[in-house]
Each structure stands twice: as structure tokens, then as C-alpha cells.
Amino acid sequence: MSKLITVLNGPNLNLLGQREPHIYGHDTLNDVAARCNKEAKALGVSLAFKQSNHEGQLVDWIHEARTDSVGIIINPAALTHTSIALLDALSTFEGPVIEVHLSNVHKRESFRAHSYVSLRADGIIVGCGVQGYELAVQRVARMLEAT
Image (cartoon, rainbow, N blue to C red; front, top):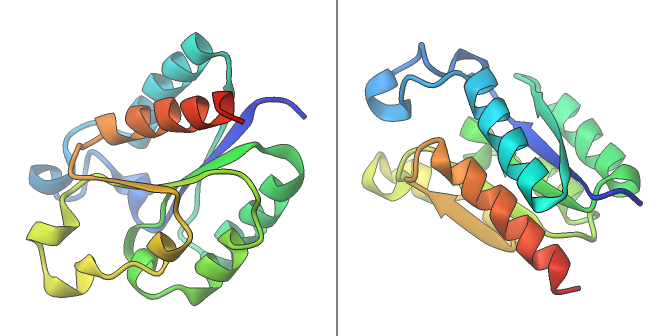
């Protein structure tokens, strides 16, 4: 199996850089993907970077990752707080899972502090802006070295 890491992005992240830049920053999702791909190349891994506004599509991609990926990085966005389906799908994945949130969800509305995904995640990165994705790539690569 190649050293492919699947990076999944949930609802509304396609609007990154446009939607509430005072919270999420000015970088677009394409900017984030470019930064992550540069980091991945330096670490000897590759990325499949995907975004969907649809829960079922994210579940399907997690299922695909079971056969072609060694790790998953996921920013489930609003599905973080509601999706048992994502939790169940991630629980079928045997490699490392890192959950990423651009903002510090613990300093926002109280409902944002609860995450179903965290019940499966091996690590959670919050409040680091787009750098959180790069940190997640580094963490998955380090976890893979340890196995």
C-alpha cells in the first residue's frame, strides 16, 4: 500500500476564504491543499484532498480510504456535532485519524465543543487556522513512522 493520506473536508469548507474570514481566515481550500501537498512531499507521503457538502459522500470516501489510504485527516465542519454516521465509518478505518478544526471550537458556541468524530480520532487539532492541516499531515506521517 502506498503512503496515501486521505484529507476530507465537510460542509461549507468549499467557501473557505470567503465565509467568515474573521473566524476562518483568508486562505482558500485550494491554498490549504497546496500547503499540505508541499508538506506531504517533504515527508514522503501523498494526499488525496477532497471536499463535500454531503454526509453520505464523506462516508463513501472513508470507506474507500479503508483500501487505499494509511491515514485520514478530517475536518468534518458542522457534521462534527451531529454525525454518528461519520463516527461509525471512521471506526471501520484501521489507520490513524486526525480531526482538524480551523477555529478554537471551545471558545465558540457551546454546541461546537461536542464532537462525535473525536470519539474515534487519534488526535485533534483546533484553533491553529490552516496551519492545523499541515500539523495534521506531520502527525500522521510521524504516527506511520512509529508502526
